[in-house]
Length: 108
View (cartoon, rainbow, N blue to C red):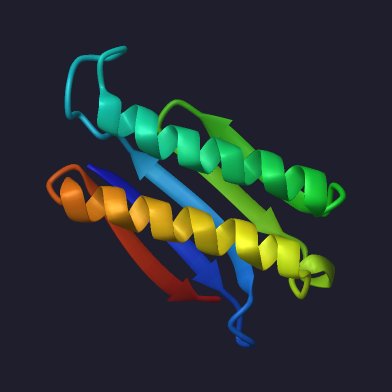
């Protein structure tokens, strides 16, 4: 199962995203659920990198995805819009494929 977590700080601002595990919906290269979530998270990372001005830390390899946004850019509306859109999209995939994708929300 792929577990995606959206982190918010004490002021309810986006603080990070993590995704760990594998979808295992279909064979590698044929997994449309994995492709959907990966595309959403990749687009969010690219948007955050562009609009956050490099004020983030990102790590990615097979089965692991982490993005942490520095405190100084968390108030930007563009940052919040990117993350809320990603959260909404991943949540929709998880609702459709609950045995393969889970979404959590945590405070940091």
